[in-house]
Length: 334
Image 1 (cartoon, rainbow, N blue to C red):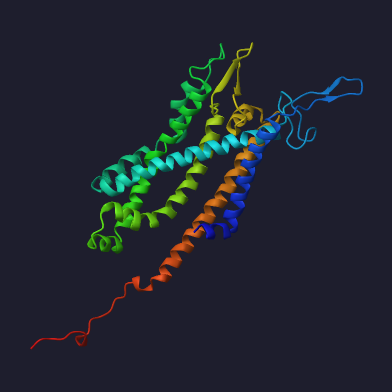
Image 2 (cartoon, rainbow, N blue to C red):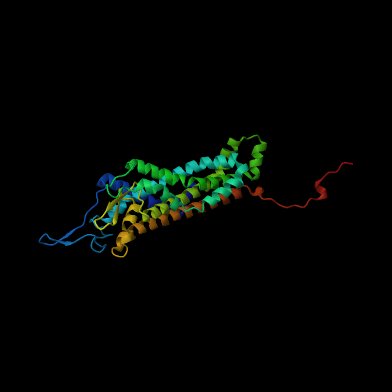
């Protein structure tokens, strides 16, 4: 299946884009030490003639923020955090969901209807709202003292745990239902007749059919995590914490403790009318990344379909044929 994935152009384009983006961000940290260039215009006499924020026309390619920091460099620095968070949350979700889904599909089948109905009701609770309610007292700093209740490492770990936990129930039920669906096939009954136990049936018979489905679910979860980060960013909850500063006029000013994309999105979403490039740049970064992740998803779906077609062609005798019995097919005793 891996060979078919890399032969698929959609998967290959998406994989190359995300890999190059993440690698470039890591290399910039190793070589450039995440230094953010500042752009200020001076006259021949040494006077400042241009003040931040500068538009993309004045400071290409994406302009600067109100502190004169190059926006393209900030997005490049934040790429490794955004993609890293997405991968960590997705992989952890899938590991725990695989475990709970296995328990549910192999040993708790009798409770399938009850559990499915319960978690179908839980799905109506918006994941963004649930994450916001839980994370707000943890990630938002004190506006007067600029302090947090937890350290930055503790905040990051807690946020990752919460983002993982809110997705586990739904994925576990989906995995468990898929296992129950596979168990209905005839080859599972044949394995039981031959004396295979539950562990052998799962690893030898169910897992090969379950693995392609898990790969698709994993990519879907990665896209969902990216969208969740976007929503939390708009709500001013940034990864690692939201630094809050009270202005003299009573307004609250937010600042991210890192250059993660959702933090940049939350910082500048209120400047869409005055300095639109500040808001459009992180939105475009998220949008392009999600589009290429969808390329990976569609390529994976096509590879899975090709695998299913190949499997069916190898076993043409699996097709059930309706044949009318004939008297010549039997030998009657006299």
